[in-house]
Image 1 (cartoon, rainbow, N blue to C red):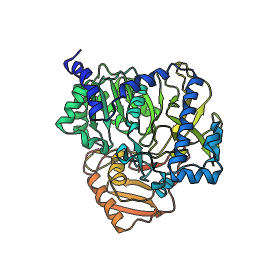
Image 2: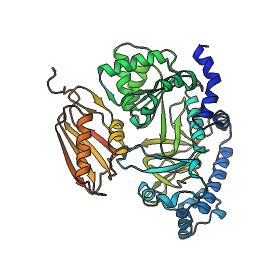
Image 3: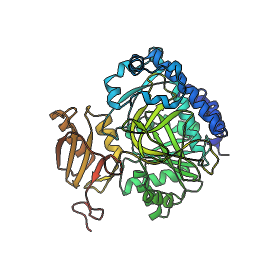
Image 4: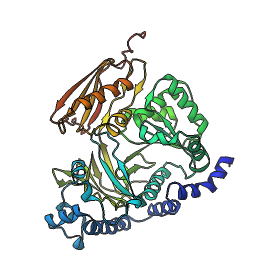
Amino acid sequence: MSLSSSIRRRLAPLYYRRFEKTPDIFRLYETYRAHDRLSRQQLLDVQFNSLQSLLLHACHHTRYYRRLFHDCGFDPNRFESLEQLNLLPILTKETINANYSDLIADNVDEKDRHVSCTGGTSGVRMNFLRDNRCRARRFALQWRSDAWTGWEPGSNVAYVWPAAQDLSPRTTWKQRLVSRYATGVFLISAGVLNETILSQIAADLCRIKPALIRCFPSAGTEVAQYLHDHHIALPGLRGVVSAGESVSDTQRNVIESGFGAPVFNLYASREVGTTAAECSQHRHLHIAVDSQVVEIVTAGKRMALGEFGDIVITDLLNYAMPMIRYAIGDYGSLVEGDCPCGLPFPLLENVVGRTGDNLRDCDGKTVVPNTLTAHLIVHGPRVGQVQVIQNTYKEVLVRMSADPAPDQSVRDFYSTNLKILLKGLEEVRFEVVDHISYEESGKYRFTICNIPPDMPPPGTAR
């Protein structure tokens, strides 16, 4: 055992208790790991009991649900079957934005909750509250699905991560000490990529020697291709968790070839944490039904097993702002039967969501979609839907929905920031539309790059 690993075994519990406010994280991890050995019915009983408690809490402690339950004739005291959830309408981002204060539970003190926001991949920003107790549970559930890759708590994890809002607090020398001696979590910025940055990322990964890599497939594919092309191996790597975006078969093949480890697809979000994750069979995603209720719905009607539709989630952990039948904006289908791996969790497949192309600038850099969402959506002015279309190295079209119609200050903000992010960009045009449509696949493409893959930046040789 290395010196850093030995120190980490002693410091990790102290760090999570003192600084992450999650004193029971290791106990919760063992509890959730024990759920791996339950029967399907035992697991569904855990889910049902948690759902009953959440529904009663929402009725007694939030104005929104008290009013909604009354209007729908829904009595949580007589809740006996998941089918009764059909009485309740779907909760949308727009509903949350319009009823924010009425959704806040009156029995969760301000000091016991925190504000978060969506990642912005839909082009629609939404703030929401979580109670602090969620933090340890979210960590523990993430660790459980990570353990299905062969990783163990305390082993090094490298985040090859494009989401700038997650990286900014992690760059100090104190945080680097925490990563090395307490958590084993190392965050590597991958929002903008070129040859120099990819070389540094490769060096960082060789230094860190991660047992697990977590990445967005858009960024992970670029890094994996660099490792492959330069014959760089990462011994000891057990798996690569693909998160944040749908991973295509082509991306999976590139990532597995470049990193030299299998890809484990993860379906998670800022709103509700880990929803479903792939096991060693790499066939379907196991739904974390001990923390969520997942429904597949089309036009308000629950779909049968195997039928494709909207993914609707009820978060069983968040009592500060209950999310009941929340339309997360992605699509998928439930799978009948069990996985050969033996895990008892119900299965999810065909998950597709909002996605986007990598954009390119005149300096030869690749800019992944989440870099744009961090700068434009998360930290930008409130707007409706947004789609960024790059037609040439020097011209971008920004399509925006008219709810609300973007004024000149919004246009100036987008134009200025896009020219900062995309070096050499000269023209930013705007188009206001009623709404931005989904593609036939069900995907919402936040960014579209129409530059041919073999076209070099202006001024470079072919």
